[in-house]
Length: 105
Image (cartoon, rainbow, N blue to C red; front, side, top):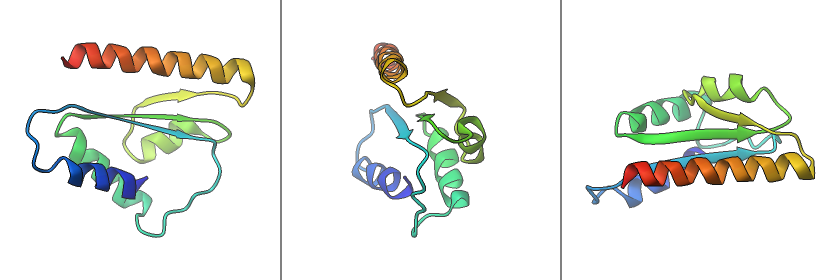
């Protein structure tokens, strides 16, 4: 997560007029970063939120709200791993992304 966010940040460093929406989706499986600690990710998220980046965290099979808060993300959604809930989650995510895009234009 930290690597991807840092890479996106670097790709935008010479741009001036942009909005960024970062959506993190996870199944709750352990993917411990060797390069970024939770504290470093939290600091990165907080810095970028000051630059009007928006972050969302969507997850299952763990305490989604608690983990998201631990890295300073307040936009969250929880789903269960079944066909109906996953379809609903993707529909809600697509709708929210569309509203964000319309608002950002």
